Image (cartoon, rainbow, N blue to C red):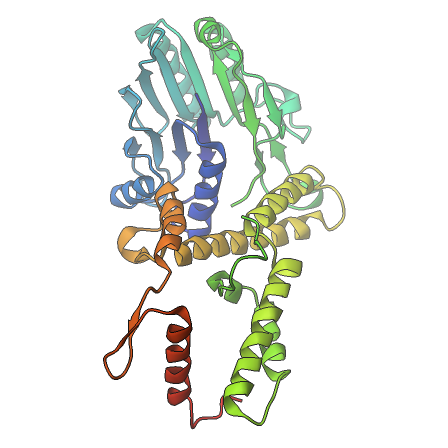
Amino acid sequence: MKIFIWNCRGLGQAFTIRDLRALLRSFVPDYLILMETKVNVSTLQNILTSLNFPRHVYVPPIGLAGGFCVAWQANLDMEPITLNKHIISMLVFSTPGPPWLLSAIYGPCSYYSKRVFWDSLSSEADRFPGAWLLIGDYNGIYSSSDRSSNRGVDRGSRLMIEVVDNLGMISIPSSGFYFTWSNRRNGRNRVNSRLDRGMVNEEWWGLFPNASIELLPQTSSDHNPQRPFRFEAAWVEDQRSFWVVNHAWGSRTHPNLPTRLLNKFQATRLALSRWNKDQFGNIQSNIKATREALAFIQLHLEDPGAHERDSNLRYHLNNLLKMEEIHWFQKSRLKWQLEGDRCTRFFFLTALTRRKFNKIDCIKDDVGNWLSSQDQIGEAFMQRFLSVYDNPDPS
């Protein structure tokens, strides 16, 4: 069982959706919890459908604030118990094993709202005395070490500590980053806090004794030289591709027009293939390396220039995710706007399957004869191409 939870701060931007899609492909969760979606019901439904999460419950935002969602795979059985802007509780029917309660929380900010919220959470435990997982943005710290500043534990957090201690909740062990939130300011004004966590009661821990949490950094196929050359649409997103083509196209000349064209195409093909191998690289490997670099930078934000590098890496990751999306769209050759921006198993399989249909078996020439020989087909294409470009000088 895997649960992916993210305070996404708005699903209205293409980069956020690309990032979410890439993360879901990496972790393949069973349950998806999203906070601060800031989109309406129909938009969220379209996004979840494209991500292969057809079943969900949603508390839409009020104006431009909020938006809280729990989604799950079609083969899972869940029943909503509580649904509001701060908590979504779902009864999970596991097989084998007894049902258990999943409570996704998005804690309020003000002290009064926190007092009402944590009081209501105590009654949530009375409604279901079984195994219970409480996970999400608590909007509070459990100890002074959960905040990088010296402010200590605030009174709103003390309300949280009192309730979870009275309920006998246990923190799930975590790995990766310690702090889960940052105000993203520089120098002494920067504050990092551990606001997100997962806590369980003794019954749930008995069901899942090996459970753990991995905290991720904040963000928003090998090219086989044996393969025939294919222009990758994602290359145009890299400004260097223009100079590669420009230099290669101008490097060859010949007094004979067909020969000149052929030489220019060959030079451009070789230059792009070499540039793709040596500099552009494998998109998925670059995404992985960029995420690792982001993780390292965010662990050393106190270093000089770290904030600028963090911003540059986020921008670079956005471009890489866009390139990956274009790469698979080109291979699938489907109408993206009609089918949605789903970079899913369907698109991957479509891209791989269409290789079987790329071969031309026969064509009809200008006088109506069918040509089936590969040499004849190639010659017919060449003659047709030369007749079209006989007069203009492409140089």
